Amino acid sequence: MTAIVEERRETIKEIVTDILELDPGEVTETSLFKEEHDADSLRAIEILAALEKTFNIVIDQSELSRMVNLRGVYEVVSDAAGW
Amino acid sequence: MRGEPGRRVVVTGLGAVSGIGIGAAEFLAGLRAGKSAAGPITAFDTEGFDRSTACEVKDFEPDRWIRNLDVRTLGRASRFSVAAARMAVADAGFPEPESALRDIPCLISVGTTDGESRDLDHLVEEEVDLGPERMDRTVARRVPAGRLSSAIAQEFGLTRAEAVTLPTACAAGNYAVGYGYDAIRGGDVDLALCGGADALCRKTFTGFYRLGTIAPERCQPFDKDRKGILTGEGAGILVLESLESALARGARIYAEVLGYGLNCDADHPVAPNQDSVVRCMRLALDDARVKPDEVDFISAHGTGTKANDITEARAIRRVFGDTAPPRTVSIKSMIGHSMGAAGALASIACSLALTEGFIPPTINHEHTDPNAVLTVCPTRPWQRT
Image (cartoon, rainbow over all chains, first blue to last red; front, side):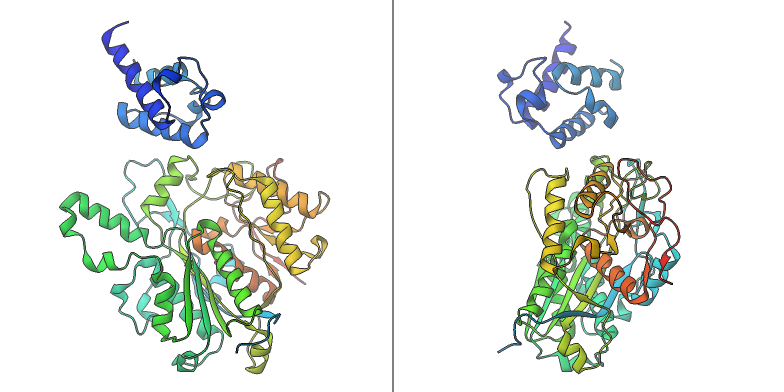
């Protein structure tokens, strides 16, 4: 994995754990925000907004259904940013 | 010693500031015609937003109604509330100057979502652009939300008024009317000026925008193609007094307030809870001692969002039965979501509907959502023959 990819993943993880008020160690690539980390739809929108701002991208709200875990978020951000 | 508790409470004066008309007569004409207040936003720059439509109050001249206070000391929401109070007091037939009201025990309750957030928007802009020392002092003094109600007492020189601003957001207008009803019914006061006020602001537009709930062009309550709310603004103030007081002074009576219901579920910040909505409607019916089948029409919250309309329609059918729930209207289709003023303006619309024997239309309602089936009069008002 290249350094830049690693850095982006770290940034995304930081944003998510910060908003969900979680310890980074608690969240894995596939642990589910809603079911396992007690997130709700407003937190999901907060994550979406923070990602848009940080990466200067636009994410359609319909993408929220894919943003269920870190892997899903990374895919959505990659698609939106054209990485 | 005030009046005896358990008095009957009537509506004798209406003051409306809305995007479809200023004053009860214009507002009534707008409701009858199915007017729409939707248009391009002028309150703030919408650059960077994918939406730019709202329901603003146009051609509002505060000096026409505000006689005693310096208009510059009032934010836009307070200007709306004072103007609406002036209209309501005049509509109730109190002669000017209103010195006769000076010593009347009185309640002023005004509901709001944003208070003077419109001013806060500007102050923050100034702070960011020019620095905190350059923020406008006159504007800063207008910010406290208590001004929405206390300014009414000041404008009329009311010396025995309790002035409260109720910040319970989109339900606040209803809270304020309910409080006025209690105060008259319980014999605490002889006069209540109650309602709600809000001015369109960037903060609230942005919040709803971020949630994905702002419609592009129009508000379509209970329609299968509804796309969300349009933010709005305005004020509604109602004059409430006891039936005896209204009869003694020969006042015109628009309506009687029979009861109301309030509850709080604290279940989720934005998702409506159907069971809780059902409980709230039942509280109102029980308080009023009215049976569901005695209700002829419902003025709904009807915001035009996916979640609200489906939840509300289902709740209405739970309370009123699946076979023939009462005709339902959402005046937000015309005036947008005026936030704290919404419940007050809807109460005024209902008072006018009762007096005039008509039901306002729900404009932009074309194809009823099969999941939110209600009897909605789309374009023309229903008129009693």
